[in-house]
Amino acid sequence: MLNQVFRLGLWGAQGILVYGLLMSCSNASKTTISTPLAGASGLDRQILVDVVDKVMIPNYGQFAERAADLSRAIAVFSKTPDESRLKAAQVAWVNARGAWEQTECFAFGPASSLGYDGALDTWPVNEVDVKALLNSKTTLTADTIDQLKDTEKGFHVIEYFLFGAEQPRQAAELQPKELTYLKLMGENFAGVAQKLAQSWSQGIEGKPAYREVLTTAGLEGNAVYPTLVAGFEELVQGMVDSLDEVANEKLGETLEKKDPRLAESRFSLNTLSDIKSNLRGVENLYLGKFAEENLNGLGLSAYVAQVSPKLDKTVKEQIEQAETALDQIPAPLESAILDPKAAASIQVAQSALNKVRETLEGDVKPLMTKS
Image 1 (cartoon, one colour):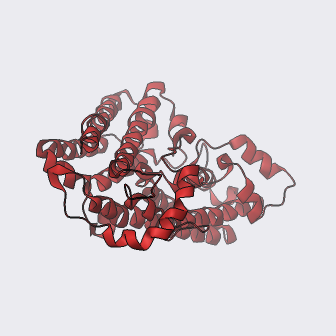
Image 2: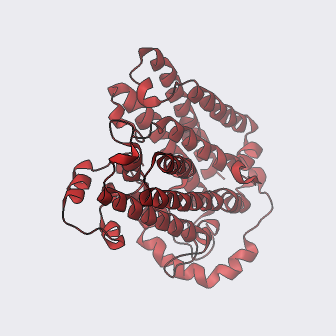
Image 3: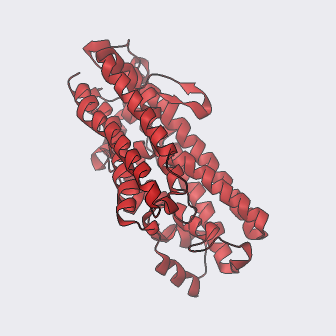
């Protein structure tokens, strides 16, 4: 996530305390969790259930699987560092990145409170400390990696090693200690990804699944989401925050300063793909679908469409327009920001993303509150 901006969400110490209450009533909540579609009279709990079960948990599961694939590809490359194995590891990184970036709009709960977001996706890379570690006499172990600062591991340090900082990476460039560092980071990365997925679907460290926290919003004993509206507001705010970061930092700031170093995935030249995946994640939550796993349920659209069909149509059209605008930006973004001919397409995309954000924040969120 850009510049270590983490969405803390509503799950802090109070949220951890509520786990015990939720554990004691989890069986009862599961029997009452599905309600008839509430329509114009109020929000429907089934929407929360569907976005969790058919979007969030499958998306985190896919990411954990791809993180494991990345770790394995890195291990193979580290053992026999040649160009074909390097390319396979690079492809695995891009695949994991695509799955992860779709989760950015629901990076609340365990992702922020348990530090998983930071451990996986802190940016920028602290190249000075990384180089200092490599030049030190420190023996690299799994514990060493686990104790590193977030700026010294995760997505972008792995990207730094696999793709190179200024010039495309050549397999022969990596020294034995760098290969060890890379392999251990891959293992650490996959482990954190698995914990994040488990924290939502099964629970972790004696705590119940965060699924139970969000889908029981408004039920007795839920101090994290004391009302059903609070659960829906969390979803909408996550989408708003993600779009704000995408439009005004990943695109806007990078174009304004014309500095490729500000592009988050600059080593791999993957920033534009990151942004497209961010928008896809927003669309998934709104529609209640995860097309990559052929999963469809009720999304926020199901409620908005009943209360204001016109507004629902507007949101869908604006998302589609933003997708089209992003497709008009010549890839990679890292080069496009330096091309005067590409500036207009970047500005159009930024404006389109901000329109989606403004509609969600100014029209959809108040609609939820009035329910």
